[in-house]
Length: 491
Image (cartoon, rainbow, N blue to C red; front, side, top):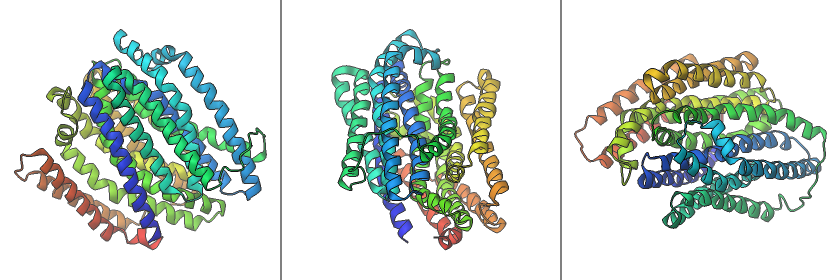
């Protein structure tokens, strides 16, 4: 029961935070549609966001995995060294990004027009400092999560999205798209400051001393964090690859792929983050105790919960993709033509939600057990082998749809390979065959019900979406009641 209450609170905060981020995308669409201005804003934040999620996420995961297993004095020395090293590393990285801004953009997004490249370079130099504060904030979030302060870490993300939105919109009135460059950095500063305040308030950093000591724990951290960085990078490379290939297609494709991706990332990230934020510290503790029975139960609980939550949402997004894009984005400069470019991409990318959520969740078990090499290899094969290979094969024929279709197939293949790997190493199964049969029936029923509801003759877009949302929530509730017995029994 405690798990469900915490999960509910974290989920609610994550939903609000994601909604604010979503509103930012809506405002970009309203102001700039699918023009090169929108492409530039989205592209400029790609690399800072990449560092934030990949490096910040890797450091957080590795620190929790190691620090949670240490006695207090040794833990404090380890955290001091990690804090000091991260400040120095990210300071250098940020300076390099700012000084060589145009070179980085040409390297990754060489297909941008001259106008787009000029604007993107200006924005990128303004957004680069956000990299420093965002990565540091992710590290501080990990320290709070280690002490079960899950709500505060979720609130910090909410503050970042709120700050990014409000500063960007206010400044864009006077500065145009350049306002988004200042907004990203100011939002990151706000997030980092919030976390530092509470770390000192609860005295988790009150004894901090700047030091750099190479200890056994630091050695373990480096050995663990490097594969995690690479593993996290492979997952985030899906989105980077989208923009690399899209930069060589027509104007607006980068923006359309981004809008479609944001619509799929919203439910997937909120639900996945809510589940993993609560489960991962339990996972790290069980791993430290080498309690494989408990690990197996946690594994099943997470996989089954994610499937019950995401199946109805995925089906609803596929069926109601056009309505979703119309209602959320079709205002101002985002016209009907932009909608027709975006919603078919949303229908395809919706099918990646379960794969991405499960891939991230399962990979964390290998991180916690400090046995991540093979999991990383499978991620690399999926992203750079299957995904990139299919894009090259299909790009000329299907253009932007090739990017989306390749991602669907590669994420599904990665999920199956990771499940096979964790079964081979530890004998972990996601469920019984009977539960899988029930899941198949639940999926079929969800398709039939949601498609049937879509045939109701309602012409008002918002009413159609409300009906779809209520139906999806009802299906999730029924699914949890019917399929969730094994989830409840392991709490």
